[in-house]
Image (cartoon, rainbow, N blue to C red; front, top):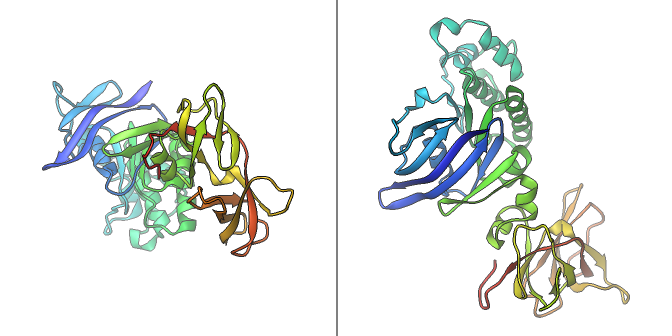
Length: 361
């Protein structure tokens, strides 16, 4: 059962188009992330879902009710049964935590058990008498989430709610938010420009680019089978190299890294001829150069060591390979710049047909 459906959604501010035909269906109870660079229209889309902005064209439906669209009565924000969590929480500083949480409830319910239940659910039991300035940033965001859930909304909208938190707090709070929304069975929409956040939290991720959804998929499919080379580079690190699929040969592609197997289940298909090939850094391994070592020879440009893994950049010796290769390895010793190495690929790859003379970066 769909909980949220957007069809042909358009929005412009003056002569500047922001959304140019957004189509999206979100299942009931799902946690969906809307991912896109700054200025791509993510927050505008969220504000339209909330009812803060009107659509210029298209339809927004929540459940079986059209809340914005031609031929239907416009439903204002307060009647949409939507919980909204803004970037900074936007708590009332002069009200206690408990009063903040219960603010959206009918007056007779504000002092009932609902507020205490929500504070316990978000891990803030016993803190109802405090004021927002007496809480940490992470605790304030939990209060904002509890307030959004208080009205038992059909959908919760999260507008980059972790942007102001430090890295450690961000990881902790987003895990809590994911757990709370799943526990409540609430349909949630998270807007973010953070790829790691989208991939780690969401059941499905919709990537917004140039005013449209260019791919809507499970995180693992979005990462391993992106719709196009630009999306491959946007969602994580990606090596995009030239290749060629021989005529009459099925399932392989020739590259500077050798003859590689194609992912037969990939969303993209490439016919014989020039192609762009994607290799994620973790699909590559780097070995110290030796007379018997086979692979792409090159020299280390840099090695960034993170403890649990390392990112190595290699400049190929092959003059036809004009870009550095990024390799992610599991820890291991650092390789100083200038070290001669060999790069090998493992696992199947994704490829897209490439027009001659076209760039693919």
